[in-house]
Structures are given as C-alpha cells and as structure tokens.
Amino acid sequence: MNDEMKNNVKETRELYSMIHQEYVIMAEYRMLQTENLQGIYVIPSYENSFVWFGVIFVRAGFYEGGVFRFTLTLPEKFPDEEVPILTFTSNLYHPAVDAHTGVLNLNEVFPQWDRKQNHIWQILKYVYSIFHNLNVKAPANVEASVAYKSNKKMFLEKVRECVVLSIDHVYDDPPTEDKHYITFKPYDPDVHDTVKNIMMKTPVSNEGMNQGISWVQPGSFQAFSKEET
Image (cartoon, rainbow, N blue to C red; front, side, top):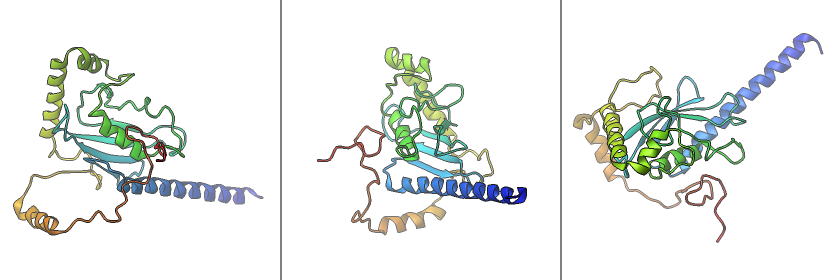
C-alpha cells in the first residue's frame, strides 16, 4: 500500500470516527426526552455539539425561584475516558460548586466515565438533586459547606442573594451569537396568549408515555440499579 492509499484509509477512518461520535452525542440528547428532568432545559450548541447550553428552574428548597444557567462541555474523546464538565455560568453559592470557576464537582457521583453505564441524563439529574440535598462529602466550596452546617443564617442570606441575582439576569442579552443559546423574553400577551390558549385546550394523555429508558433506583444515578419486584 503506497503513501497515498494509506492517507486515504486514515482519512476515511477519521471521518467514520467523527460521524460515529456525532451519532453518539445525538443519541445522548434523544435520551433526555424520555427522562423526567424537572425544570431543566438543555440543547447542544449550534456551532459545536460538544458544548451544551442549559438552564434549571428551581421550584422548591433553599434555592426556590432561582434560574441558573450552565454549560455542559463534552471531552474530545466522548463518550470515552473523561467525565464531562458542567459549569454554572450564573453565580451559584453551593457546597458542590467551585466559587471561582462555577464548575460542579462530579467526582463523587462519576469518579470515572463508563460509556456503557454513564449518560448525560444522569449528570442532569444530579444537577437537579444538588438543589435539594446539600450534604456533599468533598465540597468544592468549603466556605459554603461550613456555613450550611454551622451558620445557616449566613448561608441562607448568600443563597438568597444568588437567587435574586439569577432572576435579575434572566432577560440579559446572550453572551454568544450561537443560535441555540437559550434566551428568555418578558411575557407579551399579544404574542404569547394565543399559544397559551392553544396549549390549555389541548388534551394531555399519559397513555403509552415512556417514563424513562432506564430502570433506576430512586436516589441513584446508575442505570439498571433498581431491583426487580
């Protein structure tokens, strides 16, 4: 085999690998549609499928009313080797979130990434859980962890500050021109009432609805973890 043929074979393999990887990422995104991700919305970047834009609306607990944005970054060799990185772009005072970088500590739940066992929906469910369970073994924000355990008044004051700040910035202009960046606009009756009325009149049926693709024990982020009954 001459050099030209070797180069062609190499390019073909690289192209196949890239296409396969894009299909894997697409499949991960489709999985989200069958999982009960309460108050969480995500979408891959229009320009780069390895970057996902997300936002969570917290409906209960200390952070109730907060609207926190985040970015999920997939590693170059996803779904192999490294764990994806989830970074809150909204200011979030939380024991599991680094105060300087906004990076969520995923090491407790995902010490390593196993493509056969781990999926992005599990990360997002963990994101949901941190707003309701603040006890973490290895806090990324030690100050927040100590305050939560020993100075609840100060902790709640700081939490309330970041909740109010998140609401104040809901309608900010996007920091990027990416078409898929999630944006919000104030309610406009002339624009939204028609759609609202249609939605209210549309019957909702749960018949045949898939409530999840994985058999998961409550409180777990591991697929196929629930015992058969």
